Image 1 (cartoon, one colour):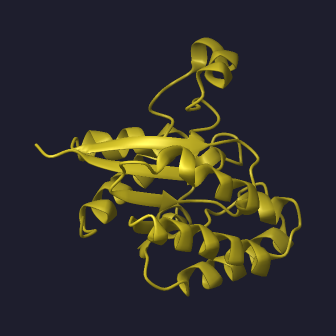
Image 2 (cartoon, rainbow, N blue to C red):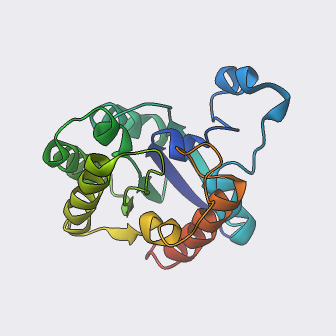
Length: 191
C-alpha cells in the first residue's frame, strides 16, 4: 500500500477539540477523557488506511495565525488540507480578510507543490444570527477560491441535529461524519 502524506492546518476543529489535540502537552490537560476518535483525521484514516495525517492545528487560531502552520507540516507531504475561519467569525473580524488569508494559505501550499483540499466553515450551534450570516458569507468566498478540491464540512453537519456536544465543536459522531467525507474527497485528489 502506497502511503499518502496529508498535511493538515487549522483551528480546534482540525485539532480535535474538545477531546483531542495533536500537541501532547495540550492533550495531557484533557486528562482521562482524551479520545483520539475526536478528530476527523482519525476517522478518515480508519476509512482510508493509506493516509498518514500530519496535523498542525490549535484551539482559537484565526486564519492569519493558521497561515504560519503550513511549513511545520508540509515537508514531504502529498496534499494539504486547509481548515479555518470560525475564530475569525467568533472574534468579529471581517470575513473578506479571512477569505484572503485562506486564499494565501492555498497559494503557499501550491508553491510547495501540494494538492489542496479546502474545508468550508462548519455551522456554529452556539453562534448568533450575525455569526450565521458571517459563516454563510465566508463560505461563499471560500467556495469561490479556485484550484482547490472543496471539502464541504458545513453541508455534512448543517442538516443534522445533535452533532455537537458543546455547541462549538463536533462530537465524536460529528467527527466521524467529517472524517468519512474527508476520506472520500482526499481519495479523489490526483496525487
